[in-house]
Image (cartoon, rainbow, N blue to C red):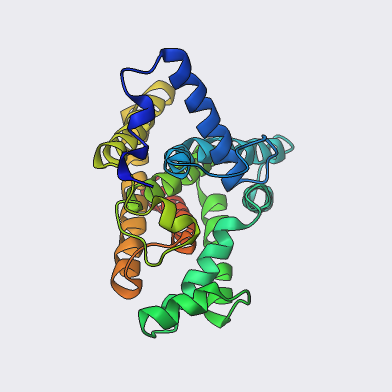
Length: 277
């Protein structure tokens, strides 16, 4: 698949209806790839399908975040208090993990095992391909999930919005990370790593910033918008740091690394929401 696979279908020569159909098809493919929701996505990925799908990941994150936020709001409707906030946070994080089929959590565990092995790139990648989970993977899963739940429960105001922000930002971090090359041939990572345009990645970040600013200003004011932008920036930096480590230690990105970036970036956003709130 060439790097031009993303740009060509949206060229000016195509009709608006064709571009609309392509966008809907790409969104369905993204939902089918990154969640267990049965939307009838493409059974096989053709030229450019994976690239277009990964650019829709933030929208998938929005849908997942809204689902988790709905659970939190439902739990808090029955009363307030720390136990209910903790329960709502645990159920929300659990629901998102269920809706994604644990896809990104599996990537987090495999990435932790590979990077934690401190072995040569080829050996680390071989460890990441194994079906079992090692001690580093278990530790990473427990720690990240614990941070996500407790940080979400500790957000003093706007916990539901913080969850949505975390889920979207984690997937924007993945789009940014697709600017790095693939660590190995084969797998989903090889279909998207190094294949998105700089323009598409930049636009994704800009749209995130605009959405945060508009939502913040429309709800409470400039203060909330600034806090949201700071939290998102910190989350993107955490994802970028993991991207840098993977590139140096593994030679590039894999599907597992992308999953780890989602979880680490999301957890970082939630911690930032607590600290800057």
